[in-house]
Amino acid sequence: MERGYWEDPNLTPKQRRDDWWRYHWFHVLCGVLAVIALCGIFWERAHRERYDCSVALVTRYAVMPDEIASLRSALEAVCPDCDGDGQVHVAVNAIQIDYTPTDMDEAAIQAMTTNVDKLNSDFYTRQSGIFLLDDPESFQANHQALTYLDGSLPPENAMDWENMTRPWSDWPGSGSVETVNLQPDRLWFARRIMTSEKDEEAFACEQVLWDRMF
Image (cartoon, rainbow, N blue to C red; front, top):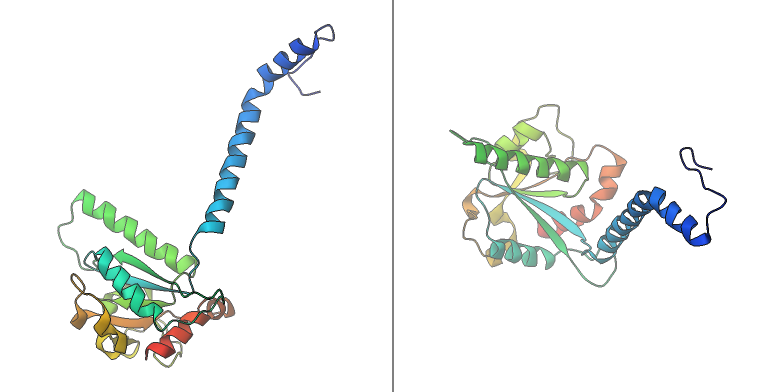
């Protein structure tokens, strides 16, 4: 018998049910809501689009949806079908960050904080193995997230970003990408640094994509 709940043996079955619900309705409600939440999570995981590769597009200017779609299509043209489902999907994780802002108001600071959190989440979950950047120098200075072009690990606090990036124009597929806010002469591709076997496993498909791009 639960502490704080006592059932009168003289009650009728209907009175017992009513009495039980009076004491336990909140617990039942919480249980139902928990089941609904779990079902929602499982449904979302089962139905969300699966990606073979992910590219983080980190730029100081907001990028238009058409530009993102065009970039995704060009990447999918050379991306391998790593999960073997017969389809190729590339995620383009667009994140707007200006590393040299001046006179930011409260709204701009809040937006910047949100976007930095989005990038940190990308790092933490090992989402993107390739970056497309318009300020690789500041990106490397702030995150130390890039590796050398030959895949070797840079020393601590390495700042020679020129040896870690490939210009946008080096990629043959760049000419097919629609650019409006994107500035082709200020874009560089780079790969994420990999310091563990988990990193190498997570970004195996991105390594293949990189080799096919260049």
